[in-house]
Image (cartoon, rainbow, N blue to C red):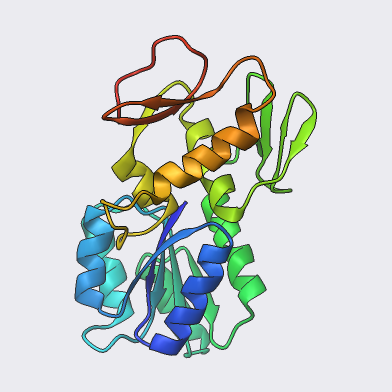
Length: 230
């Protein structure tokens, strides 16, 4: 999952960003309403966390403009303004939820999970393929009944591969979904994590599930031919 955090308070933005990344969310940060509009319109985010009061424009205006552009990405608005009228204004501008500062990080996470579930009520909380199972709620992984311990990034990477089983996922998509917009294309960090994930998922099993598609990306699936890269 990839989140755009729009917050001009550097200290708060840094704390939230680190917390979200520790939970496995690829997170980009913008302190400008104008830049945030362009990022949200151009990049494939799963959620936008939007501060109500920004230095260059009102968060309400940003939210309205995103909706005018046809963006359906969930928007969680943050604000120090606690009056009911302010909350109503935020929801009327197109926000999906509203959280008043100061707040506990656990509540922010709960609201994020709730927003990401909306519109996906029929989606299973477990992803499974060929004996490999990932529990999204318990954050656990098993293959053929064997429990597998993964780091936060490994879990996010495996979730992306499982959601796109039998499809080739290119490196740019992996970078955007699992890391963030500042990812260095020349870095070998994706290869390192794929290698680690392959050792944990495939080692000791007769059939490998994680495959390298040279010059393109990676695929989780059986050895049969895969769909073209996304």
